[in-house]
Amino acid sequence: MKSRFFSARRLPRALWAVAALAIAATAGQAAWRIRQAAELARQSEPLQASPVGATASLLIAGDSTAVGTGATSAAHTVAGLIARHHPGLRIVNRASDGARFADIARQLEGDERFDAVLVLGGGNDVIRLTGEDALAQGIGKAAQLAAARAPLVVMLPPGNVGNAPFFMAPLSWLMARRSRTLHRLVRQAAADHGARYVSLYKDKADDPFAQRPDELNARDGLHPSDAGYRLWYDALNDQAGLDSRLATLAGVSGAN
Image 1 (cartoon, rainbow, N blue to C red):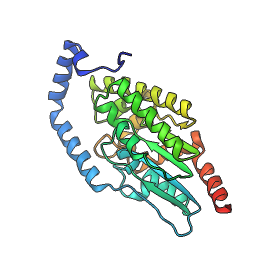
Image 2 (image 1 turned 30 degrees about the vertical axis):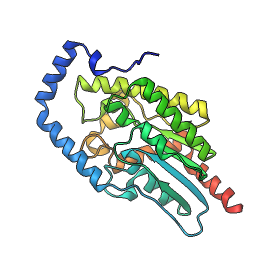
Image 3 (image 1 turned 90 degrees about the vertical axis):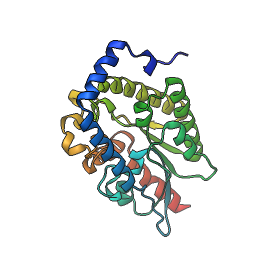
Image 4 (image 1 turned 60 degrees about the vertical axis):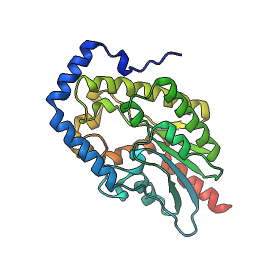
């Protein structure tokens, strides 16, 4: 199957010319944002929790968004919000900055069983131009391994990367197209392996991250802020009922 993603070799020359002009015009700002993203990554660490007498367990796998890069503290990340609402939950977080889905699949390897698995990732595959075939394989492998680790699997890819302030047209158009493909592949893999897919993808006019960029994005214009991660957490509950499902799993595990 031929990749539907754009590759560097397939971009029309005219688009390359426009992209080069756009990059040159914003080189200073882009360099500053890249430095900010690197600094935020250095400051972030994946939250883990090992409460005494834990009543349930959660494995988190993914990229910088699973680590919580961009948040002011671990308490304001998705993992931190989960830990706050479920103090009896053991959380093992194997996420790492820069991970693609092929890396996420490796994070999910092993024999230990958990009550739930949460997978957050895909942005690096969008930005770093992973081909569609390789991406589909990585997503499918991650979903398969996650399903083998827990009865509840939730997959949360990032929203429309093209709407991130980090990117300007025409690169933002390419990122939006690739984001749509990412979501299609994650949605299909989730359906194939009995996982729950949570969608953050929206067109720019409907995307709160595009309409409220200073509030919901971190200073690098790429990662969510504290408020942005709160929206991600709300989506996990609105679309997958994560809180109620974790509470039920804790009750079942505690009774065993």
